[in-house]
Amino acid sequence: MARFVQPAPVPADPYTGDRLLRSWLDRQLGPAGHAAATDRLASLSAEVVGPLRAAHVDAEAHPPTLVRYDPWGARIDRIDTAAGWQSQRAAAARHAVVALPYLDSARATWGAAARVVQHALLHLYGPESATFSCPVAMADGAAALLSLPEVDPAVREAWLPRLTSTDPDTAITSGQWMTESQGGSDLARSSTTGRAAGDGSWRLTGEKWFCSAADAAMAVALARPEGAGPGSRSLVPFLVPRYAADSLLAGPDLDPAAPAPGVTVHRLKDKLGTRALPTAEIGLRDAYALPLGDPGQPGLTRAMTLVVVTRLHNAAAAAGGMRRGLAYALAYAGTRQVAGGRLIDSPLHRATLGTLAVDAAGAFVLAGHAFALMGRVEVGADPEAAAELRVVAPLAKLATGRLAVAAASEYVECFGGAGYVEDTGVPRLLRDAQVLPIWEGTTNVLALDVLRAVVREDAATPLLRRLDAATDIARRLTPVLADAVARATAQLRTAVAEVTADPGTPPVVAGARGFALRTAYALTTALLVEQAAGGDETAEVAARLWARRWLQHEDVAIDAHQHLEVLC
Image 1 (cartoon, helix red, strand yellow):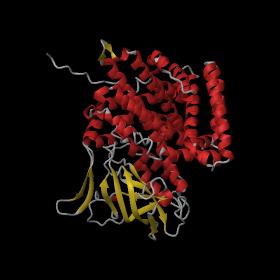
Image 2: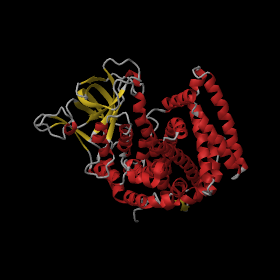
Image 3: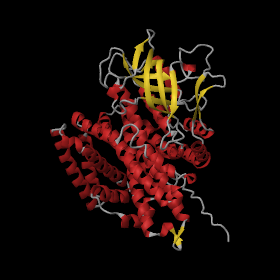
Image 4: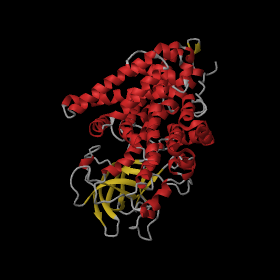
């Protein structure tokens, strides 16, 4: 008797097989703008399903290692990474995954919507990048920070072209050294100090506990200048060269690839997921650094430029991972035989997949909206977009992060026992998703940020305007959907009034997470309605089911089963 072998799932092309992505690009860019992006997106997609998928597997199978000493006992702190990791690095540069929104040619073609195209690139690239999407995110954040006018032009000219290069031989990425063991997300407890060296450079001393992309050529580190006051606002972002080649403290005999003087890699982290990504504990002892902005002025606001960008990348990673996991689950269900038929023909399994597709659609439009807003802020200095982005950035990050974990758990279950076996690659979906509600602020940290935005900056006003407009749009689609949006808007308006009336009370603070999630779910409904208004059938079905699932807490299984082909 022949041994049965289950065919490996082969998901659809991530660009041509994603109807919502292509329709969304049509609406955001216009047909001509989308056409201008098609070759770029198709080229990346073709590489994702071929060599980059293989590179992803290689990098995951060969996680980074730290070599502390050379054969003769010299401390070298070299991080060795897999060939697949290097392939992902080169591809990110070639396809301008970081660089695109900074390229003059891209801004000339798409204007503020260059960030929309970037979001599409991330949607294709990130899910099978062995988490190289993380150094991509931090490189983008560092580039945005370096682009600020208050940064020394000489520092900008030395480093920004390298971060935004599309030549793999010259392109670099960045790390982000903020977290310290005693503080975590409580930056006010940061103990790393900065001392002026007299030549415009500084020397940093301290311990950083969670430094991802520890192999990157540079990092943005937070430090407190000598004499600065306590608290988080007095912290200043500094650019720290990672290697001797870029440190003015390195002598002529030091290997350019050696760690910069004063930078020590204590150990690599053994993490639940993102195992191909080198994350380290790093010590600084009078390490060479360059201030990003005036070190005599409080710098946390400047540093938040980086954090906003990385939070949006986190949302993009969540949405992209949800869609790719769905593609794999659909492919498996199409070939797996159960009870005399294909798994994809089971009404119960179709309902499961359809519900996952609704959540993936919501995550995608929410992350995409944040990128669109960021483009309008960067290119047009749009004050309305800036006001909305202030609250959308934390909302998008917190909501998509939680959705991604729940979806990943379902995807593992969709594969049965094979989903629990490491060499299928499926368990990685869940292990890697779990970081998404943690990186760049946990759900509770971000919920409090949402409260601050609403109370101090009137950030709810643009959201309520969008929801009011979505109610009117929804009336042209279906009265039931319009009524759901109207009820959610009224409830949110009442909640905002209660929050702003007395924001420091224990009930308001205790309810911050629920408030933020309800706000994010209402906003996502509005965004799906906006997408549906142009005739997008996928978005219309997703909007109706999302509203029922997340605003009204109804079971949508029957409709998810019936509309699976439209949703996917």
